[in-house]
Length: 435
Image 1: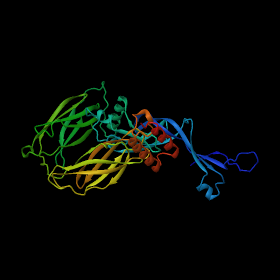
Image 2: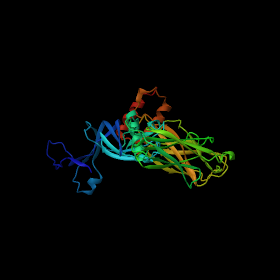
Image 3: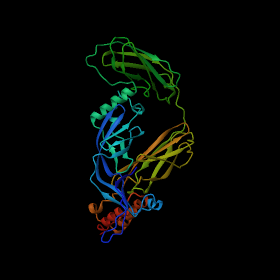
Image 4: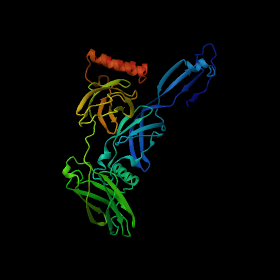
């Protein structure tokens, strides 16, 4: 809702008095945002933003708003630069490394974004747990003005791993003062194919911390796999299972599995068993590789993304569908519905760049292909957003280069990403750079 900042005043034709609008409506502040802090909590993350280059829209009306034509046709709309207020409401979208996009809102200095830590698919007791969370965070303000990668600190990564552990009942906590306890380990039955299940019981009177099972086998697909349990309380059991990749060699269909279970405060214990695996079926598969667009692209413009899709197996991949993601905006698109076995095809996708993409930034792009009974495949690329405000900070421009950049400005103007006033300013800066 727009707030009325200036009370209405009737315009009289008094001699010697300059005419004034009946009323002026001033909109909420807009700003360019940057991430200043990131903190982690059980419900998600809290992002602190800094605001700069603040402005707001002013709409002048020369008749009462009770007159419909006055509401629809203000005399003049301008944008004025203002001092950034201490409080600005902000809506934020954050993409996590595992591909989910989460939305939050709040004040500019404190935006809470709920995150479902249980969906990460990360083993919190794996050696690379923190490293797998370091990259892949991307934040975008719904109001525009920011597209930025988040870089969690080492402390934040430690907290994220702990939250994932709590959310998945695989606690990472330790207790150096804990007394030793005793574990009982057994294989757990499973009706699913190529699954190893383990049951671990703490028979002692103190919790067992950081309980982990490591599999060893003559079959390389199973050797070295980890099954994590976390903390197991006294007289309690946990049952966990791990999918084993199917072997392609018929001599590896009945390997022996040795499971060694360790804990911070318990003696290691091992159990062994011969299991029966099902051979891998030669079904269809998908792979996709995309190249970064060669040319810079302006906000609100479209760019062409070239990808190669392949099916390395013998069976035909059917029911294919395609989704292009630019930043946090996902858009279904078209492509071949089938791909024969051992075939590959080069495809071109036209990607719409968000009109609020930050000038001079790099925007991540992804193309995800799904199919009937197929695991999705994703190809990744990045588009360079043209620096429309660069002026002569770059090399001098030839006339052809100037015309190319001016075309991008026109596209941004047509999409609403630029006002006419901003267009004129940026165009003048580019003209000054022509050789």
